Length: 311
Image (cartoon, one colour):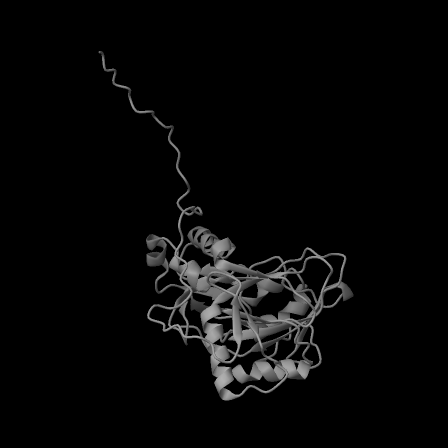
């Protein structure tokens, strides 16, 4: 009997770009390390995603929150990053009152106002101020103190489409390659109001806001002030460059970091009904309003809560 040695099959050379997106298992950790998970006693919670997004049932948000209920809702916000409340149909004043349990309300002179200057109204079909859609972003990172969070209510919902998506940027950070984490550890990036709004407004309209909101630097990886989790804190709308890097290197790295929000395992998608509320932690997430509902109308109102300086 003759044994024939078969040479191993040779594969052609093939290299994936070093900053490509990779398949395979991901770390999907919803809670900070060492966090004690406890049951919720004052409402029912229904998870909508593995690491982000939960529906809260059994609450009427038109009523003032008792301190114990506020604390439990805050724990849910920290653990799930975005909370959904069906069919609340709040007045603007009630929506503002709910948000005020987390701090003073923020105004945004670049967006159309609703019933008061701290209520932003998004009315796509009426020709009002254009709004952020079809782009992953974190709100107002061009501010020295970006918003803590926001409370959004849909007043009018199109018959098809108009969903909103959120991404958990702590999960995005957890899954970065070790060499990328080393490169961005301690790095800062510049955030600027201009790139986020230049596609809406001309120079004359934007010029006053350029002076009002000069470029600011924030950590590329911020530490959540309540959970201590490290969170990727750059976004396509406002982050222009990484401090101290050559433009080409900065652009390539920022492109890779911003693409992390696109990973489905880090996301939750919410299909709206009239009167629904979403309350999200702007320190830990990015979001994306899906514009797939033309020519129908979609009307929303949002209040934002003042935040602290990222560290």
